[in-house]
Amino acid sequence: MYLLKIPDGKGLSRPYTPTRVTKTYFEIPIKIYDDGRLTRHIRDWKVGDNIEWRGPYNDNIYWDNAKISHLLLIAGGTGIAPFIRIVEDILDDDDGETRIRLVYCVRSAADVLFKDLLVEWARHWNVVVVICGTGVEDSLPILFERLNSRLTEEVFQQQLQALTGGDLQNALVSVCGRVALEKDVVNFATRAGVDSSRIVRFPA
Image (cartoon, rainbow, N blue to C red; front, side, top):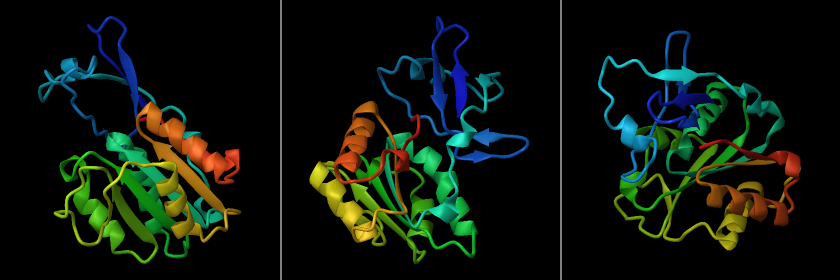
């Protein structure tokens, strides 16, 4: 996680999770909202501007993939960001057997970020990509499963069951998105019997 601070924003700051980190640069997706307190400053950035970032922080939030048999990822909007590195690490491990189910909650197909990368993931035997939202169109790639619904508790339970077959011993649930989505997923997972130590929240 990296912290963005706006010098002229009267103390405005916000944590962001990178999708890629190297020795010389890092990449962070930022969604611009019309009424966003931070994004009204970000909108005016130009190539060559100096931007103040601090970090990384909380790198210990990542886990040992070898100890996870089933991984349910719930992302909302730019909340897909922390899962990029996690899924890529799993897919880069030729000996890895973790099964992944990514439920990506969006308003419409236009809101799906990293679409080409998600298509690549969906071609792997151990990855299922589910696009979930009331405005999801049929124009999405055929490799994606589509749910024309918001993420209700029933939908969550169906996705967890489809991934684990009811065996939660080595399963892990992780969520990144808006606060309401995170709270819902934590509550859904807890009531479904997932141990609290195996429910992970990332800052969006």
